Length: 419
RNA sequence: GGUGGUGUCGCCUAGUGGCCGAGGGCGCACGCCUCGAAAGCGUGUGAUGGGGCAACUCAUCCGUGGGUUCAAAUCCCACCACCACCGCCA
Image 1 (cartoon, rainbow, N blue to C red):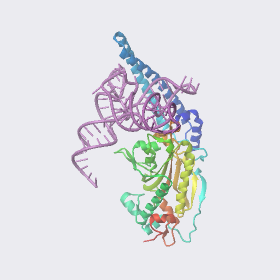
Image 2 (cartoon, rainbow, N blue to C red; image 1 turned 120 degrees about the vertical axis):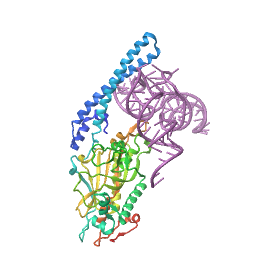
Image 3 (tube, chains in turn green, cyan; image 1 turned 180 degrees about the horizontal axis):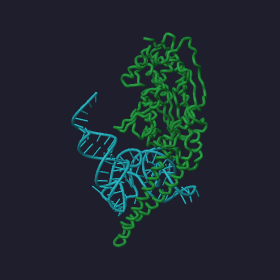
Image 4 (cartoon, rainbow, N blue to C red; image 1 turned 90 degrees about the horizontal axis):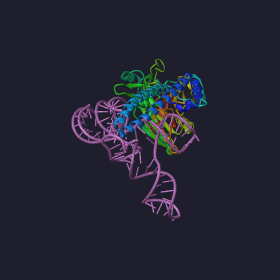
């Protein structure tokens, strides 16, 4: 949620942000006038309420005719106060609803435009030259007895899979390596709930009413998370953090669930795009003024992980229109997938500034003892999808796959061999 | 799922309609005292929103949401969380 005070003081900032995202600019004026109306209604209610309280107090002191007169006046006021309060509340609700639809203000330097307007910041390594026709991860997964897509479909439907044998070992090793790196960097490891309440989902910046990605359990009013960012963001909801102890850094391991509605025909083969996968996610709470630097640190930790699996990748600066609701800036790391001949997203780190924290009421106490809204950031350390990049980039002519050096102790194997 | 109990400003607690539109203790901060500290004494001690350069001031907040009343922490209703016991399941 954007800050209304900032909006009042500098509406042009939001206008520019909306323009960069390719979204409606006129909402700024609608917000301003609605805010103005709400504040005046609230002021009217408050002064009426103050008078009501004074009259009410004098009732208890008065007696006889005087008391009756005061009672009459008090009754009259009570009705007016009720009406004024209702009006202020209605305007407040209208404003809240509208504010909740406004995406975060983009960080300065973000490339404007849509999905294809990203800027490549860096390319690390270069695609390998194969002296044989490389197999895709599905074929390799079958050969190695690592991925069972057919039975995934039989048991659960399209976009489900089983990781079997070395596949399961590969994922466990990869995610454990991610956890270990995070722990060594000072993160608190977390295993989170994957079902959350609507307020946790919405606080994090997902609109449960319209988001077609979210699995819902209406019977229980619970929602399956698409990332552990959700429970980790809501973890400190309604709390005031110790300013001296910031940043708070968590590494969450969870399964993630996505409906992938509307992606029919996209990535139908393999485990690139699936309904359920596992992920280790970094999550930071810090002071807003430190968020930019913290974002760079998260990116650096992602690159450290990427370097451990020894695949070529690039870092892109996502364009404003592709940031989503909560992010002010987003960097994606994309690995080279040989059989697709292109880079695919393996990790993503977002600076959500104070946007999520304001919705979730996460604050910290500053040096003056004042409560301030915190900033939140997140970034991926490893996911099931990384297996695709590992298998395809490290395959050999006979269908075996060399396990990257750093990963060997975690997987317990140097080479994955066809069965 | 059932029955009973509990839910107050970081923690503990007072509080059965206007003197609580929230008192006390602990903790914490500052000051006095001290060579320094502890103890002791004194002062202060939340959040959100509005107004003001500011000291300050007004409103809201006693689990959440409704209701009764001129007036609600206090009465009524619903819901939620926690605790205990029972049942059911793993």
